[in-house]
Length: 176
Image (cartoon, rainbow, N blue to C red; front, side, top):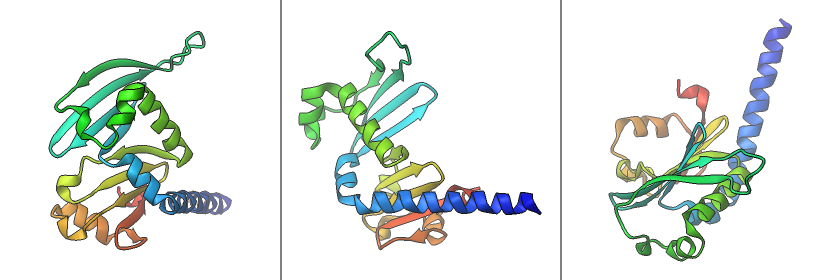
């Protein structure tokens, strides 16, 4: 019986943490949307990818985290795949001035501040403007719900908690 209470206690802590993180993102939504518009950032092992989206074109940069105590440089550039000139982005001044690596480091710090594990702007073609993956939950912003054509995303919206007409969230355990 104690085990059941302990599990329920852990679940409730997880939900409280998730709601607090969602509230923090929602409270800062204007800044977050401006910063992460048309960007995807995700980690795979030591690899970190930052992708800039422009219509159906993408610029993908791959970095590897360096955890050496003897190196000041924490990110090493590995590869890129470029389909457009970054001058067309609103953020091109930042990219040009500081380089993509510095830009990525800045946004990794920002993601850490909001407890965001990954950001995905790759679902625009399905009507999802941007998706934020947190530790225990997922938050999405939809600029126009009428644009959602994919049945899986429609089901996601129908089974999610609605924050307002544009923001939705759900715990990961519902995804399974």
